[in-house]
View 1 (tube, rainbow, N blue to C red):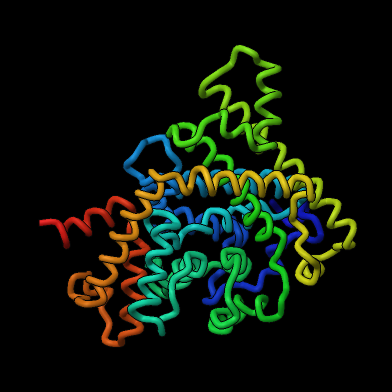
View 2: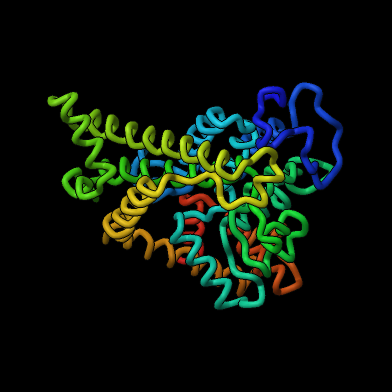
Length: 376
């Protein structure tokens, strides 16, 4: 989206705080378009294809992965960005990059890696996938001769860093400053965060029903699902199976998008937001209405208790914990088991390098590494 069509409160490319390393201006693409393109061409983005969302990658070809999830987040976010006059390419860049630092095996892998860091190297800072996503684009990608990382703009990096402790914020320079000053990021970053929630809640319903771990009868306990289940059943009394689920979920996603858009417009008007600087000093402006927030929270609670804590998912999480923690201990105890580029003399740097190595693994690569090291 060009600067002439952007709303005054959007993030304008001409006002970008720039990159960490100076580069020549591209006459054909604005800075946020370039960020989006760099993310898509990165190795970390390609590896998302084989990183799990809820189900381990090899359990089924149709279940979501981190890659398909990121694409769905970007689609939802762009739709709302267009409605509100925000910068679509910046919104998409943040959406596509938000999970680049995620471990294999989803949140179970992240929790296992954090626990390993805290137990074996408590002075090394733990592990958090949001911080790791920023580390990937700032340091770990190796695509340019002149610098590490992708050298993204400040605004994309700010959007990737959704949350951050004050201790970490102080180590991150300008990109961490808003957490210290208690300011808000741009609307594009706020939007990507909510699009993430819309995407994973709804596609986890789809995957949960597809897997048989939850049923339509159970889902009808949730008001948001029940509302559109009844609507679809009334309009199409003979529809069932995949078509029924698809009709329900697309209506749920649309309802959330419409509510988010309408509530954002009301908030922008109520707080008299005129510029991007106004956004940073205002309360969160991208929100659901209170009734929709309550329904979305009910859905999240249902999924937590009935899907994410289903005994079959818990078994997968237990295996993931064993794999990640075993790999971490083995590599910390003997770094010679890793490629030479991940070995360091300093123990804290070595622990962080082990975390980088494991976080960069796909599900199947982590399983192969475990078998190579521990299965005779």
